[in-house]
Amino acid sequence: MTQLPTHTDKKLGLVIDLDICVGCHACVVACKGWNDQGYGAPLSDQDPYGGDPTGTFLNRVHSFEIIPEKGAAQTVHFPKSCLHCEDAPCVTVCPTGASYKRSEDGIVLVNEDACIGCGLCAWACPYGARELDQAAGVMKKCTLCVDRIYNENLPEIDREPACVRTCPANARHFGDFADPASAVNQLVTERGGIDLMPEQGTKPVNKYLPPRAKDDLEETDFLAPLLDIQAPEQNDGFVGWLDKILEKI
Amino acid sequence: MHPAPSVIIFTVLSGLGFGLLTWLGLGVIAPTGWVAFAFYVIAYGLAVVGLLASTFHLGNPKNALLAFSQWRTSWLSREAWLSLAALAVIGLYAVGSIFFDNHIKILGILGAILSLATVFATSMIYAQLPTIPRWNHWSTTALFILFSLSGGALLAGQSRLAGALFLALTIALVFTWKSGDTRFARSGSNMSTATGLGTAGQIRMVESPHTGTNYLLREMVHVVGRKHIDKLRVISLLCAGVIPAILLLATPAGHILALTVVAIHLLGAFTARWLFFAEAEHVVGLYYGKRS
Image (cartoon, each protein chain N blue to C red):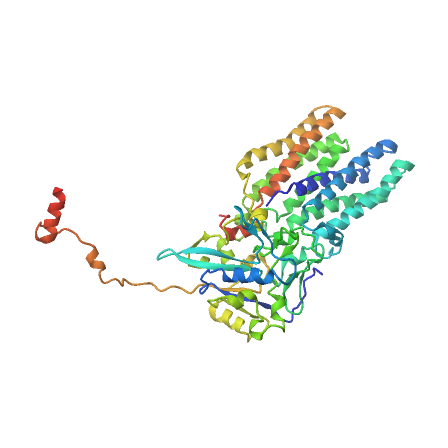
């Protein structure tokens, strides 16, 4: 049913720390690895070993550069997957009811058995979180590893999304945003977590922690003053002699 | 956006078909017998061929019937219902006209409303999307309705009516381009809001998430062919609106002339619809540094 639930008991989602992410793409690989083998159609690749490889991914890492008015530029690695929006526009546009948001935990999912592959949900998503699998012809998106987080066959430590579990820098956190005391909510409050494209009115559940302000570095190289060698006005001393010799060459 | 041929064919042809059905249903022309049969074959042919073409871009068409299920929220689903209802109601009206010389007015008017509502629903599939600012405006709906009504009037042999509507279409085309060109900039979405990094300085992409292309770029960050936009705009404006209007309003009506105008208008309509998709910029391009 493509009517959005008026209330979800939980709001499961991710916090992504842009200050910490090192852009290693481990989450991309872990995501593709896990979601290739269980839930729904596998994430296919086209021409994977040829000259023009493409494929379906549920999570991708962009890299941006912030160029401040003064000071050095700063690189920010920016992982992006489905934000499991409260007002998910991808759900309401779906003509078949394949796209839905669960009332129990707020996860946005695709029922591939009902999907016609029209692509309208991908158009409706501002974040590029949905990709139509070119082999299966159905829409793929982040499931928040719904087949891990409730999976009692896995050790408890593994019951979180593959991207979170694998992140070597701990830049990704998984939790319930409906619970004010949850670790993810505390992180968001402490660090001023933000919504992506709030003007689109999607009310994303996933939050991004902006990079912390960098220190202004003072001059630390104590040899630096010696690097600026200038010939003195009067031509005497070693530097003056060197200057004269070099002029003559 | 990727200008998929199936969607261009679908929106242009079914728009024309439903436009003709609207004028037939309203009784602007009220043919009977074989003449009526010919009109309805043309109208149904266009509408149905268009609707069939729309299934060709589906990744998984075997579930197509489920598209009728979500009319509460989805314009695509509403369009499916409205098109079916329009074809059914006008079908009954057509049977009356063709076989019994009897125009059942109430069915005709209801059918005309449903036909126009179908075109409205088609336009809303695009106009509802805030992710594509160029489309997210009432002018998208106005354009689709005007294309449908003007082309439909032409096919219905109403030279003066069609001529006047082609003038209106010309104005609408110019307006949608003029206002659409700046709507992305006015939408409030930019790299700063997309990444949330804007407060610290200017932002640029240093590395794409992938070395090759992907579905998102192919589907929503279509850039090929934009370089000829000015020429294509002139071609579509002249062929879809200006030339048909002049020919219909300034020369005596006739079948040869009408056929010529249909051909010219179709060329313009297909060009305009291609531009409608090719020019539309999706906000996801911001994450790829493709929107300035």
